[in-house]
Image (cartoon, rainbow, N blue to C red; front, side):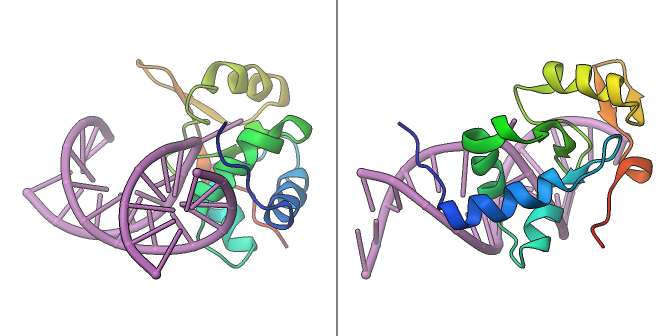
Length: 104
DNA sequence: AAGTTGACTTTCG
DNA sequence: TCGAAAGCCAACT
């Protein structure tokens, strides 16, 4: 069994993720920044545990790639929401320049 | 208290 | 522009 993040931290993360509008995305670092921390990896851990209840695909890496191992599932949501994508030879990536969402 | 792990980020070559 | 290495933060043993 892998470690489960604290409920307080998790709840804060889920609130931020749920606030991301369709067609937009935020990086793990951005979500952590909203919480006043730089724990981008901790955010990922929260998604792994509680991400089922939120649009986890709207939280991606700073490089524009979706969550490792979930790129295929995220792609379906991106195409459905009209999220700006950059299709490459190797795969795809989100156009952060257009899709990045700023809270506030 | 110290060590390990992770759906990460940034810097350097 | 891409890949490797170091850096960081939170949580568990």
